[in-house]
Image (cartoon, rainbow, N blue to C red; front, side, top):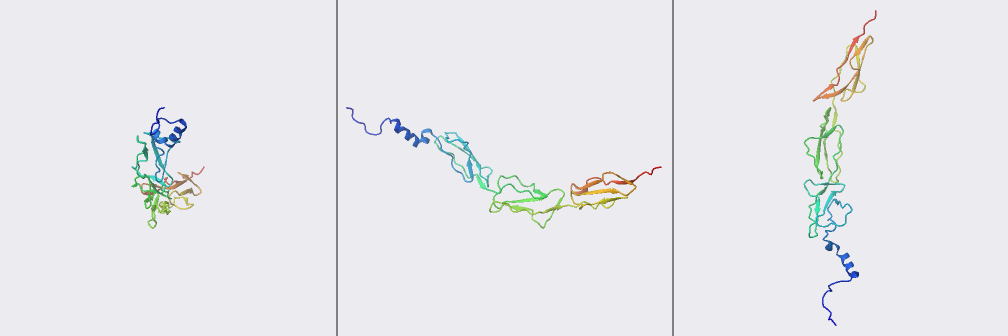
Length: 223
């Protein structure tokens, strides 16, 4: 009779081998496992559960967070079964800057991907509008990551007084401010030569009436 050997057996029956493989699947396959959790971000797994060496996984920032420009948001599975390390690349942020009535963001601002608490945005008035300097034209990202409520800091500029037209009338339904219309008519016995209305508009830094004023021309008498 051959004497029994000491130590682990050289082979295992299938009934014992399968549980061992299930217990150590990552080591058996050289798999990195699920990618690491990152603050404020979600991994784009795309249904994958296995990540062999060379696999890449990207992340996207969750709602209420924004990516920090220049920070890497992709991990790689290394041959040793470990993921490459990442710095935090998502930070809490206010959302898209809100639109304001009659204004827009100043052109000095370079587009940024995130607006942390305390971030200030300054606006200026659209053409045809003037600034009310008693009201702030800034908004701020607050500590709860919402924007402060913008105030109305622009108002419509006025066109010159239209005065009068000879042998006719000018009707002003509302006012002579930007985008408002005025209308022309003639006295009896006269006809309108030109447009019957015009609107207040801008030309460069000046406010103008968009069309030349018409004239009232005497009608020719018959006979």
